[in-house]
Image (cartoon, rainbow, N blue to C red; front, side, top):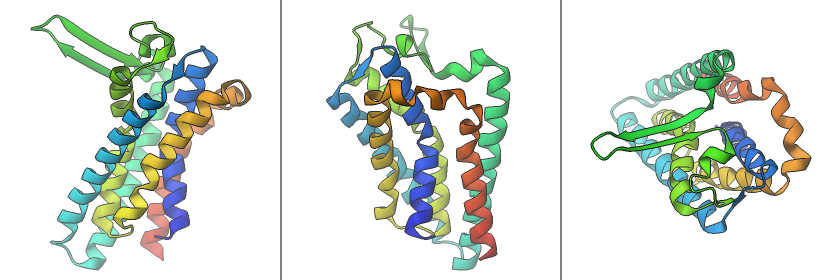
Length: 209
């Protein structure tokens, strides 16, 4: 897989981060720089670990089999993302929920949804490092499976995987700063399908060529 293809996948996987930044910005909620660092570090950790796990399993397969399996897995992930987006748009309450973490024994429930006011748990007007931890975990779900398939297929190296957290950092920063200029992007529902479409296209391309 070429550098351009990896970059395209990284951008597609991080559209949620762009929209998240836009959502925060339009509601007047700023993401602190140290919070962005937390988001970057979590994304980096998730991407690298899933890539290395995929790479480990790929060692037990021939190069051709691992390439085909990784590409096929990428197609499956893309189809799943499209199906998930389709059903989430029909069920608004489900689509908004990103993280629902509950410790009943302690009476603690943390729910991060795609509403900036709720992600800002303490209503401070800023996304602080602790809040950024849960936001980053939510934003890393899609990149986890994609990184695993790239590691399994041997279509990328570990340095190229760095593009995923880097692009995420840039996307959420740009969205937060240019919220009012970019908010019209959120109105295009088709944009939510782009990550799945891109992954399917890259998977098919690498299976055929």
